[in-house]
Length: 312
Image (cartoon, rainbow, N blue to C red):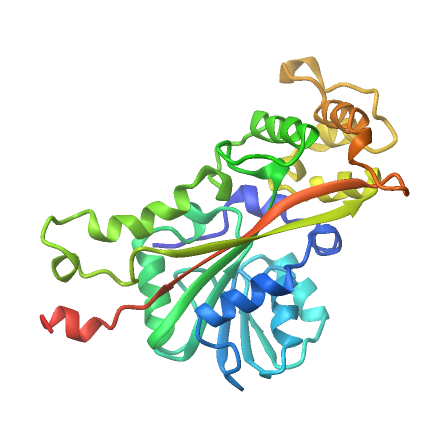
């Protein structure tokens, strides 16, 4: 089964350089904790697969570490991959591939990381993807995922730091395009269902990855100008996927315009900016906005296949 990149991802990530410029990096604390759980922190020369590496936001952090990792960055999107290749990162091999066609030999990587993936069920969350992950990991290798989740893009059950960010989150959900993302929580289902097909336990279910999923998060907050906030917000794929007419409406210079009546929704930018303008208590002396969120990370060990399937 192919996981050809969904049209929403192709178009949403088309402006790769803008994505690279305005998307955030990851807190040092979160990266260190994740790598410890992946059992590669301090492991010099460990071979790490950065799958769906995008423009290399997480790849760069791996390169900067003292372990001198051997990094394979695999990315299906041509524009994103090109942006990553232009960086010429030391110790990084950039390859084309996706979740079910990883161009590596079996048992060839110590850890597999997926960072900030948007369309998890479409690109990763099915049995063939897990089988491919399991194939390339060494016995006992660990699979991890990490996301920067701003409060304005958070699940609806999260407690949001400020009223204005809660309002922006409502706007984000109102423009939902029916493509599952982290905030929808569906990424857990494929792992949970490893044990859902049998009442007889782990041996009969024959899972590829350990359960329950290990999970933790680190809170973050940054200061952004009004303009910088909007540039960052536009990197959300459901916003960047708006057509040319809709994109013109949300241009920074035309805040007072509204979306075409056929959309039956108020201009997203007007609503967002209205929420921001009412947030004077959330600004520093430079007039910058306090933006809050969590860096969420999870991990699971590859279950050795032979002993389980042999009943050992």
